[in-house]
Length: 177
Image (cartoon, rainbow, N blue to C red; front, side, top):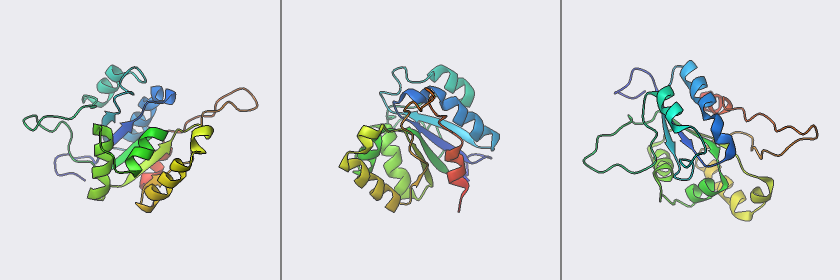
């Protein structure tokens, strides 16, 4: 647990997938499990993939997407854990390659180096998951100790419905030994 907070602090990294609209479900589940939450979004996710104002009201903190200047105070304490949900093809491949060209990716690369537990709920279409770079990225990230939930492609099932995303699964991954 961080020295600055009474409760453990969870970073939630949100990527640009349609399912991101439901990120408040993850925040609620985390708060019910006694986490403080701060949200970091990819730049594209900030362009209408979820309601940033509602998330800021829910967490009591700004949604971060851009680097702060050295003179700016740190808006979040250091993380005790990180959840990436939904985690997209682009973010997973760049992270595995060590590319830190956004705050979200830089945070993920740094969290690994700090030994912070990381749970991921991939949201990748089957056609993209078939790309060889994706498989190699999953092998690398698993080798780094990243904990993965079952991939979510969002495809419609035989009844014409999309399956639930299951946001709380990320928290379950953090709680396992």
